[in-house]
Image (cartoon, rainbow, N blue to C red; front, side):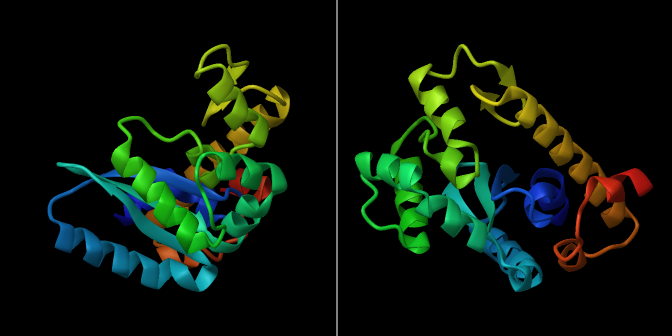
Length: 191
């Protein structure tokens, strides 16, 4: 699981993105829970958490997030107002995550508010909803509807971060230490 987390969640580990999400092969629920426990032992001291969002027949949806950054994101007035309109009643982090999990379980499609939980800009989440995923100005880590040049720069930073973290891990840096690395574009240039 560690390779998946580094590959899909490096910007979160580097504290430059609120959260990431990935699909993980499911062999048994007990094994998955043990893997998550072991990962959390390494990443929780840096304020990063991995949790199971949804279980399918052969895959599990794993959510890795920075607790403090996610709490800030969910407290933004426009985000709270939107989430309230679709049924979120409490903005306690645990309650929000539990409600998101329920929505994932009952919906065949991804609930669109997941963009807020991943730290996507408000305008892009709302743009995606209003345009039904079409007519976007740019597509990278998500579909962009506003601030295209800024998002292109951010997406490059995420990609560089991923390459840097993968290289550091290949060189023997532990997951726990990766969570403590201060990532800058200069660090990626030096590698």
